Length: 392
Image 1 (cartoon, helix red, strand yellow):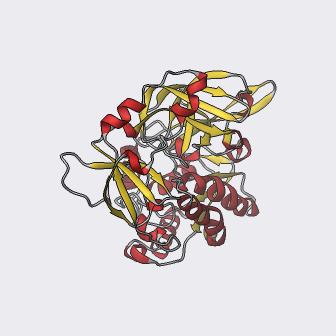
Image 2: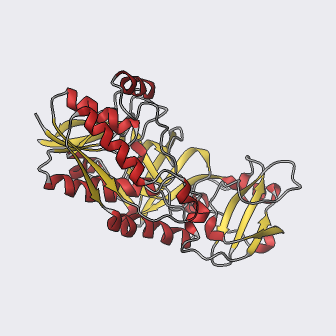
Image 3: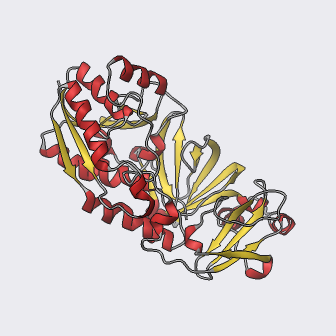
């Protein structure tokens, strides 16, 4: 019997995870994380942490397990929210959920769990874990969840071997409908509760409103780039000499297109964004195809297949390359084929990682839509997540 701390969030997934662990006979302790106190803008319309904590406590009571609340809001602000603001300010688009798992759930929260003499920390993530032995050393594998529609391994792509060694994912072998059914059968208070949406631990929030807490609105131009301009510029051969052209955003200039409107700050927009442009008069919707926070310009193209939305590759700087499987780490000069994902729930795409001294070049078999600086690229071998890195 293991001593396990379950992160109980007030949602159905962690509730069923707790039930399963209890059924397996583990010595279980439920802990609710408070990571955000502020009520700003549209955040006030969402469920508050107090309501989530009350529901979580009801689940713990139903399962007859001890319940604690731990306040990690200082760490969350410094290590997730401040980072998020800094990234948007710099014109990049971070993934707070990935950061939350790396910095909070499996770091700050893990530390709190260890104070309770926990052997493991469990969460309601839809992913799996396995162990193999390599050269006499135990290697922890991070595997995709059985439910391909809910697989959350991508959100855990920055975990290391030490963090994985302490992790348990009880619902990883289940499908979401099966989780709901278990919750109903056990009359858990979360059985019919909707899945949470929005920023990890902040709640359902209008992102621009949230960002405006620290990022000052500033009027700038919206410039439309014609599709034929991009078609002429994109005929680049796939060679080592052309990796930079293939893997970095096209360097748009104001004279490449026509001013068609204004926006309130380039740092509020991300590649592939459609909402919030508020410009009519086009046959097809407009999409953001480039941002320039220095000039405070956003570049847009008409239609979801505009060539400016697509790239053949991406670059991850050497310090940003993270290997979950440290025993499979590639060295400069090596290249290897992987299945690659550049955002949550995106289908895996075939590509080759070419490792150089300064970083790694990811060249896909097919062009990818909406590659975005600041997001995470994760690479897999079958069901196993091998590593990840921040897109430059």
